[in-house]
Picture (tube, rainbow, N blue to C red):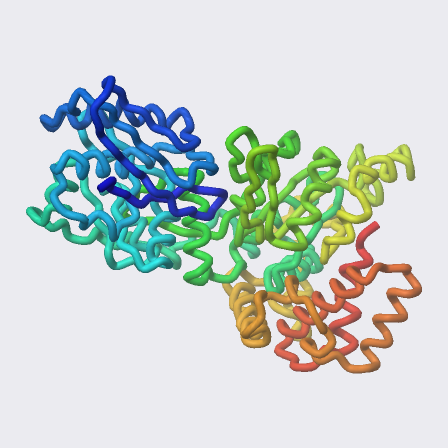
Length: 512
């Protein structure tokens, strides 16, 4: 019988089960791997032969044929070494039983028979758990793989340990569970450091509470970038599912082998010279881009109007769907891209359009030409717009007018902790509201919004009239409604009233 060992082939962030079929028979001695194997997979023949020789096992002078099935799927990566060597060892009778059949196996072999870490271990472990299978991976990947909650994980350090375990001579204990620090978030920035700019802090709070996209616009030095760098400090704590999603992407992009891991929401800040491939993903091997690395976190594009217009327009579909589909002639990959978009930009090329302290000398063409890089369909997908002005008074003073913060009629913005409490309360309201739906924030809400949000008829009429008078699209109508609902959630209000709608319209009409 030909032994069949199970492993996985990675397509995006999905695993496809792959069979490693091995046969050894008489003929001209060779070691051949077939089945659309990439260069790294074909090189496994050299590593396997050297590793077996290191532990005193010589391949017989026969044909060794390894087939990777399904044969119409491209096989790339270093994780095929271990399942290939298991199939050979079973064919030689060194592995004496069929215990290996219940496992999904991944791992790279070194020339001295040690089993090296691979970046697909967590994806493979989750696949094994979902399909009720046990899992074998390198020792250095064992702790991280336990996040999948698969209780049957074996993590050998070298080939001898694996052989002894499969033969029942040495049963390996399960790996230690990796320690996740979810409440050890330390940030350099805090909302207490933002002086004045009440409407900016309010806009960022609403964005965090509802998962809304936001753009800050203002002259150089007014605090746009600093304010956005404070935004992660008020984002809601991660759920267990979000932790797994972030670890999955991070492990595929950067190998994670630590016994202790601090998980934060991603905060990606690509430079404005970044290419479309680096932002969206792709390349020869189709790697995830910045929007996938920002999944469940923030994608911050500073100097927004300096980005290539084609790059910005490529964000339109993922902003709506939370996914990015990348198609090439020989491969189609879907990556998750459920990120919250944050942008900052100057009002014009010189940066002083609308600034009362220093006027732009090419009004209005400097601003009009500068903003042409931002297409209408792209801006239509943004929920909140905030305009900042240069701080004319008390510019260099420690004391800046924070009268709003001292007024009991307005939310307090003393520090990030107090704001985060309000944000998490609003998120919990949304989670209860959308229980049973495939979304959990107001920004992602779809369907019959009026019924979900309990909108008063007078409020609906006001919103319709406003959109008709300003020739706004149905998407803009829904976005105003969603932001208004978030404001109501921050207000702990069941009904969406006129004040909530007017504040939402204010943040919408800041778009110039």
